[in-house]
Amino acid sequence: NITQLMGLPFSIVKFDRSLLEAMSRSENGRLGLQGLVSMFKHINAKLVAEGVETAEQVEQTESMGIDYIQGYHFAKPLNSDAFKD
Image (tube, rainbow, N blue to C red; front, side, top):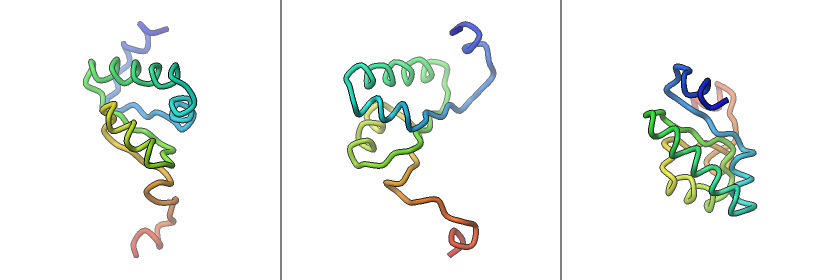
C-alpha cells in the first residue's frame, strides 16, 4: 500500500523498462509514470529510468524530470575490461 511505501527510507527510485514501454504505448502509461515521478519528487528522491532505447524516450524522461537515464540508447552493457578502455 502507498502509506507503507512512503514510510520506507530510500533516496533513489529506479523505473524499469516496462514502465517506459507503457509510457510509449499509451497516454495512460505516460500519465501513470508522470504521477509516480511527481510523487517521488515530492519526497526528494532521485529518479533513474532504465531501459531507455530511443531518442523519444530520452526526451520524454528528461521532460518529466527524471534525474538519471540509462539504456541501450547510450550504450550496451560492458564488461569491466571494455569499460576501462
